Length: 206
Image (cartoon, rainbow, N blue to C red):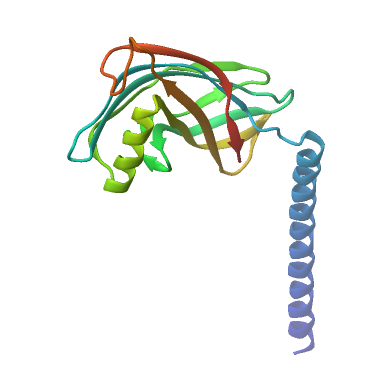
């Protein structure tokens, strides 16, 4: 009885030491990751809407909106020591917080190294998409005023990469305002290829 009792006590003591050792290693690893994170402090990428070619922007009397535009948007990784790995990127156009084109998905697994610049040129399409009568009335007023504000949105899932270490998922939201104006030659609604240069910075949230 005495030997068995001592043997069980030694085993429990060994298990306790193993658990304490594993816990200490986990704490040290987490602290090291936290320390690296604090030192590096990832900076959000920069996005610039370079230009937009508006091929179609027509509103029917049945409150159906057809939109077709080719956009050029550049993004720059502003970090000097951290890479950015994009798992998933969707780009679409919206008008007064209502999506007016289908989301265009970029190729998955885009990686951007430190200071790298990448240019994306997706085609955004929305064929006869229904909008509310209220929104249609507001858009008609914008047409009459010869200026329409459309927001180009980017929704992405990314990870920060340092060496072989990669962070968890972060949600990136980008908003790029695009003001479309008309002249005597180009009046709304538009249905021809008109290129609008912007070079406008976008707001970025992670």
